[in-house]
Image 1 (spheres, rainbow, N blue to C red):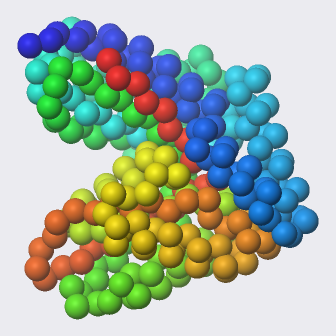
Image 2 (image 1 turned 120 degrees about the vertical axis):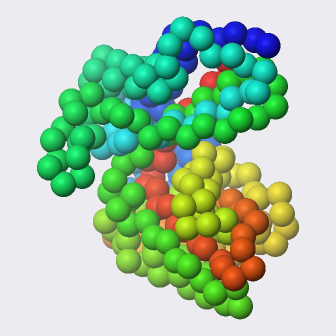
Length: 280
């Protein structure tokens, strides 16, 4: 059994909140540069260039990539041979988030009540997911999720007899409805299977996977490629002003489900799809 003091979790979360908000992921930058080279629309090319320049400035000056620094979504893979000591895990995570958002001058966007709308002033509590895995390490992934794109996400309970084409129509329709409001070019996280809440979780977690890495299942990887191609044929383009770079990536995660159901969730994410991870 390996002991890990939760103070190490606090420090890691602090570092990851800043890194995710200041340093755009390499796979996203790579896709943006690829889009810039392939884009035929002059206005779209200029927008993509501005997005890339913005990311460079954010990294150099240590300022937020986007003014919406999001809700901090924290995923933890905790080894079953780990004993966490020194305090409460959730409290340790929220301390790290609060400190990062204060010291990093990141916008605090969390309200304590969905109806009364009073800002907590700390960007906490974070949304925390824990998963018990083999081993004696803790992997921490932090994803600041902005709500311009989050608000355009969708979920649908399909019938098990519905064809894949109907799922594709739902995903593409979700992108069409999002239009310019979710700050394209997009990254889509898609959850298939599970239950109502499980497929939404899978869609969220799918956004953590590098967008140049396909699902290991061939038929799912094929669906990812088809969706990306068809979404980019919509003509929405960067910031909704036209072009053939509407999406940078489509990542699908799937799970077993009930014989009577086929849940599908689409978690929309903008060009500033941010995450960072560390293993302790």
